[in-house]
Amino acid sequence: MPHFLQLAPMQALTDIPFMNAYHKHFGGFTEMMAPYIMASSNSPIKTQKLQKHFSQLNKEIILVPQLLSNDAEGFVHFANALFHLGYTKVNWNLGCPYPAVTNKLRGSGLLPFPEKIDSVLNKMVPVLKPELSIKLRLGMQTNHEILPIIEVLNQYPIAETIIHPRTANQLYQGAADVAYFGSIYQKLTMPVIYNGDLLHASQVFELEQNYPGLKGYMIGRGAFINPFITNQINGIEWSEAEKLERYRNFYFDLHLQCQNRSSNSSGFLNHIKELWVLFSKSFQNGEQHFNTLKSINRPNEFLNAAVVIFNTGKLVY
Ligand SMILES: Cc1cc2nc3c(=O)[nH]c(=O)nc-3n(C[C@H](O)[C@H](O)[C@H](O)COP(=O)(O)O)c2cc1C
Image (cartoon, rainbow, N blue to C red; front, top):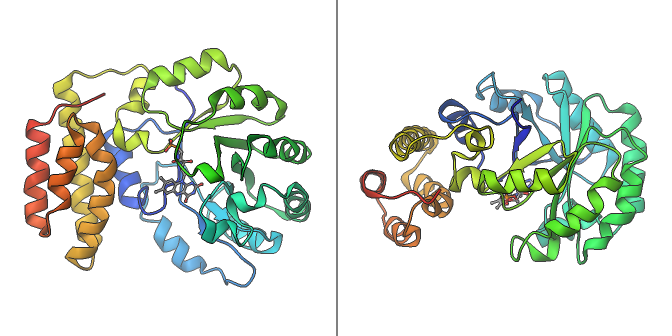
């Protein structure tokens, strides 16, 4: 039985071209979560625009849209519109750690206020059409902020909770607190998904042994740094040559899709360089490769440099 694996939402990185290319060349994600859409009662939903956007996704991919919101009315409005477009599960982002978001009491900004989370859930759950998934961190400042939130979440019919065991203050620095995660996940009564720093299948096997009963695993940066991870978790191993061949086909498919969608070369180069912050870590001497790419200002030159990396580079994973 394949593992339950979710692609993590990553604003500007896990976009439609990435999801389509990953699905085509690697596969293995049970579901993919889209980066957040802001959902507030004073921003009117543009259903047609959303439909057009998501319709570019391969029909085989099971997509879970994600909403960033602190008001029940706005959340329900968007979530029910998404349900009518065919999305049967929607995620509530309680994890975004950036001050521009948290200062407005959205994302992780809600974690110190379990009573506010309770009030939003109390209003939205009775009228929400899709299933509700929650993604959260351990707290804003400290790990144990999650404890009263667990008591709140347990009162509602929530399909799953995804935990990224860092505080918002940590952003993405420092280690994810896997031990603390292990000490609290069984307090949740709904299925739980672990998310954070998964780069290799062996980490998933270790979590599975140490923390039985998890529903599955969400993987973000690992899907870029070790794009073989979903297959490795499901017991498929390729030779070095096969891995490079697959990675090359995936990468150049994505590269061309990104180039075709960009209206100008500087937009394209900025985006592809963001992707290479992570892709470069797939290769030995990745920093050196990244420095070469970073200094390039012409799309053709960039393409040639990427070809050289794939022809000469050695994979880490
Ligand atoms: C550039 C970037 C953008 C992100 N955007 C989102 C987002 O839109 N919604 C969200 O819930 N998490 C977002 N995250 C967090 C990831 O979904 C994930 O929780 C985090 O990267 C930890 O998982 P990983 O170690 O497997 O990457 C983002 C992370 C990064 C690095």
